[in-house]
Amino acid sequence: MPEKFYYQCINCGKEYPANGVRYLCEECEKSNSSDLPPKGVLKTLYFYERINQNNVKDTFQKLKENLFLDLLPVSNKKYLPKLQVGNTPLYQINELDKKHLNFDLFLKDDSQNPTYSYKDRASYIVSAYAKENNIDTLITASTGNAGSSLAGICASQNQKAIILVPEKAPLAKLTQILMYGAQLVPVKGTYDDAFDLSVEASRKFGWYNRNTAFNPFTIEGKKTVAFELFEQLNYQIPDTVFVPVGDGVIISGVYKGFEDLLKLNITNQMPKIIAVQSAQSDNLVRNIDNEQFEIKTSNTLADSISVDIPRNFYMAKKYLKKYSGAYFSVADDEILKASTLLSKNTGLFSELAAATAFAGFLHYQASGKLKAKSKNVVLLTGSGLKDLQAVQSVINMPQAIEPETFFLQIE
Image (cartoon, rainbow, N blue to C red; front, side):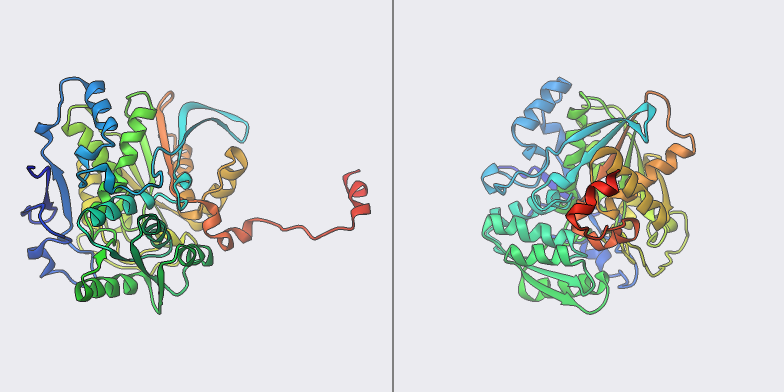
């Protein structure tokens, strides 16, 4: 069977065949600095000309019927985890705070994935690839979501998961990891310290590494949201997509999915994709227009996107520049307000990292940049139950009462 994909370095352009496990470009990795984003991230490319492109809906339906495997690095559906990942709800919202919207607002709720976050899309494909290649131990560094995701997906596949987390990761996510039976290793230091240690361990022991912007297939898993949005919007491309950004992998995945559709002539345009970061962890958006990368220590309540070194910086930057995307940051207090507004208006309780995208939408709306009748999507990437401590400042837990006083209080 001929290979259906290959790799290309986003920095030097060197191509690699799809044989054996690959992470970063071998040439560019040699010159990478440990305190800067890596330049040798690999992009997975397919032989698009081999895929039927005669009719848009016909081509798309054939891809869907085969679970999009023609555009994924897995050869057979038997290797895919049994858990249902993706095909998450897309909710249309017509008003906020009782004010009618003159544009279409859609919320893509990826908290409905098996471990309650968008990260399942990446873990799903990484696990399937490992299964196909007889790899039974996987490792990742995580602030919590990627770790609980890999742990859950591996549990469904009878694979061993080793999860390295910074010691201050939220308890709910650590609980998930342990309940799934994974080996949890808290690391003194930051996410970046855990990342470096996991890479060293994978090289020493041959474990398959799921790290975002290190394993190229994380982007392949995350791109599937673009295919779903295209279908859910009745085979139309949205005008804007708001994406919460930490290391730059989710936004690169969204771009990659829509880019695949462009290359297959299924679509003829790219939506305006908008990267939103916390101002307390803005190392990606702040550096896009800088000549030299500068690190600022992150200190945001939105822990899932708290990253000092955005590992997929260069790919995200290329996509944002090539397709005229937008990028900016919002303060943590804006994120908290957005989280409250979102929950009270829609019934969707998202973790602060996900609410960052909604805060970006509100910021964009206030600036008057959203056109009437436009189609706008906000990616909600994780459940608020992932980190209850983060929102304690915006709620007031009532004290218990004596039963007989209830009616007096109501009256």
